[in-house]
Image 1 (cartoon, each protein chain N blue to C red):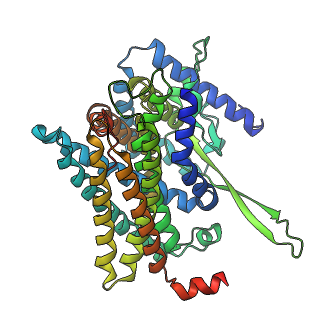
Image 2: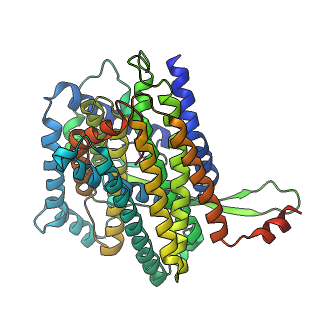
Image 3: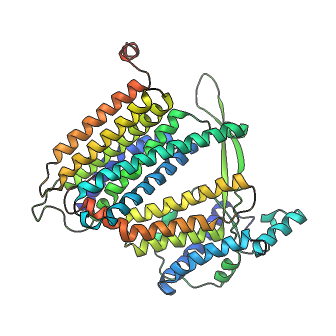
Length: 235
Length: 246
């Protein structure tokens, strides 16, 4: 749909879709829906991509048989490859007052691009360093890494839910962010080792959820004991 | 007024580490990854030590039980991270991808040690201060029930101390283990002992009006000692320094 627009427009549109989704989950849907939805999604992701009768597995095999390149198909209409150079997660904390529920929600659920191909496009451009004596050409390669839209949205839902459930406990937010990033890193490492399409959701979500629940109930008491009522005790 | 205090304490605690990040780590993606991975390892050690604290129910108020174990777990995870780095370096050397070295994924051992210590320190300091900072902007302040009024400033300076200390501990730990021989025991031993000393000194902050000067002075003295030890470990001695100055 938006293949031909500049990068900024694509990023704005995908972030906008993300915000709509998050606001639906946080305000309109019941309270417990995230905690039910995210583990089920992680399990579904694993089933759909890894097992031989999963739909995404069969789809990928079909693509490889017909030698089609995955992003160029228009099967997933809203399955945009989100090109992102700096993922700023701060946007979801801003509340937007009037958002209409759009019917693109169903499309986003369907078009859950959960296999983790990181396409690294290297744009080598030469930068002339400003030294007067010699002109040194430095090659800096900027990579545009792509993350599937569905993955992006569900990570954001997890992060947004932790903001509201933990009553803006900054450390819990930082921890969940770290777990999501580490989950992505681990998935990339496994991808390099195994060389087959992998789901991007389950590791990040499961680690993030486990750590968040643990920290919210137990780790928080530990932190409070160390800090209150007197004197910081630095471990 | 409270926002001023919050901004001040944030800059005290994060000013030096932020500039360290901008000048040394930001332009090297490999070091960023190492820092975040080591932060994750510290997080795991925190979860383990909080589990221990939570499990031993009668000793929950006696923090003198929980703190040494927290230190021990942190150092164990630092060692585990060192083993992970060694395995990764081994795997990278076996694969020997030329394109990776062109992109700058060179394995500089000192940079890896520095980045890992920095990651540990950053998340450790964040644990100590970030909830204090978010509460600081609210109404009211400390000191009403006889508590010390210097809580915020002392926390900020202690956080700065612990971030820098962790950086140097990381360098000492990794380079000592790399050197081998007698350094394999002196280096990590020093790290563990000084970490234990620092954490247990902050236990004296538990009284109602604590004297923060004790923990601050001891902390910064340990920091100075660690700087000197790192410099000596990396091969500088007095002659070198004299030659560089003149």
